Amino acid sequence: MGRQAAARQLRAAIPEITEAYRAALARIGSPLVSREDIWRQCRHQAQSIVAECAQALEDGQRPQSPGAGEYTRLLGAHRVVQQVPVSESVRAADVLWQAMQAVVTKVLDQVEAEHRVAAAQTVGTAFRVAAGCRLYQGIRAYEEAQRSAAPAEPGRGPAPPPDGADAQVLGLLTLREREILEAVRAGLTNRLISRRFEISEATVKRHLHNVYRKLGVGSRVQALNTAFPEQGQPG
Image 1 (cartoon, one colour):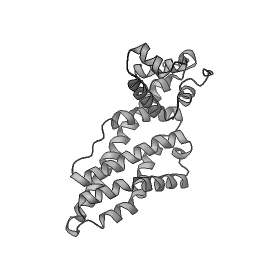
Image 2 (cartoon, helix red, strand yellow):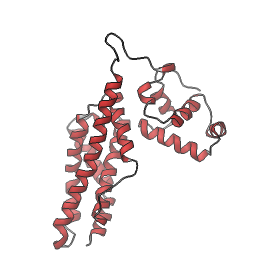
Image 3 (cartoon, rainbow, N blue to C red):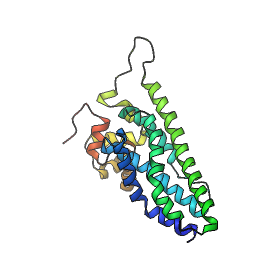
Image 4 (cartoon, rainbow, N blue to C red):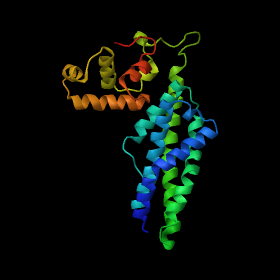
């Protein structure tokens, strides 16, 4: 079997790897599986890393995932809000690599013998690059978020979130995403939001999808509860 076929098998096994990864995190008591929103973010990162390994196995090129750096920086900052230590991300990378081993070994055993060692090296290098870049970006963002959350001057606490909002959470969003979330908070439908900002409904949906992804939620109500925890939501 060639590297392309092996890459397809590795992609097809992503759900299996993800489940093994979650089970391994649960066994060590990782907070990354303590809440569903945190796990969704962790799962997204893991699946992206495995997909990049498969891509590298297929074409031999350094893996690249558009938007991975931005997402990882946002996620690193969000870990401060979630009170998940940055050390958990480092530990999770090792756990993911171990969770991949059974599948990777099975896949590589089917590669032609003369190409097997090179293929294994390609997957290992791709994993180190994909996981390492994410760890670097995430740790930097985590540290920056910690500094911004600290009091600016001795004796003076951080400024309260505006209008009952979680300032750190809103800081994960772009200006337009915040505007749209505020419109959702006001009870506007996607159609009304599109008219207010003179954009298409499809664009509104795309912005909301980005908001959900960044906040680790799956609905409008969850997004509002996360961004505005101290205020009731519109009926």
